[in-house]
Amino acid sequence: MKINAKLRDTGKKKAKELRKNNKIPAILYGKGFDSISLTLDYKEFYHYYKDSIGHQNFVFLKVKDKEYRSLVKDMQLDPLSRKVIHIDFQEIYAGQKIEVKIPIAVIGDAPGLKEGGIIEMNLRELQIICLPKDLPDSLKVDISKLQIGDSVHLKDVINQIPNIEILQSAETSIVSIIMPKAEKVVEVEEEVEELAEEEKVEEAAKEEKKESEEGGK
Image 1 (cartoon, rainbow, N blue to C red):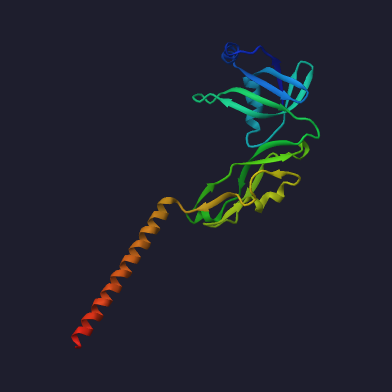
Image 2 (spheres, helix red, strand yellow):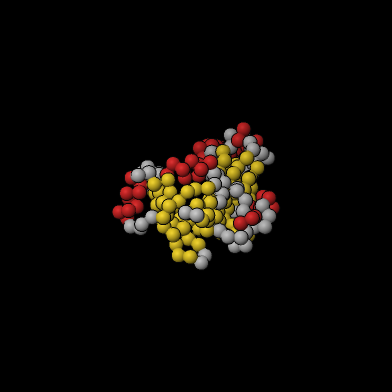
């Protein structure tokens, strides 16, 4: 996506004024130049960025007569309104290996869900190193064959995205189909009751045997 950006003066007071005027203070880092303080139009940025949620996309920042290919490296949100209040961009150039996080997208309907199981997401983002040309927008994980108790690990799906280096263990669990906790508690209670009943039966059998032996004397 392409976003128009303007140079700005720094300072907390200036940044506060920009936010009041529906602008986003930002900063661009890159190789071979000092960081550049920028301002973006909130509506323009949000319009393009909301369409890329769930994907890792390049942002082309147009500053005066120059364009910078970049990635969002950090985004600060207001804790109450959840509005974007500051963005850090990193310029990306050809041949440069980049360290990024890509989202994990679960697809398919797990048979285990029809049996009463629920989805447990153990990993929502994949941290990788790759060249810009090999950057995937997401990692798709198919759960259409998962039964209750089944899981998908990184090693099961990582061959989908070649030419990348994974920074997490291949043994890491991504998603599992589990029993709801309430049902697990019921199962445990039932097992305890069954054991208690078995103990009562065994105890009664011992008493009966003892009485039988004493009666035969």
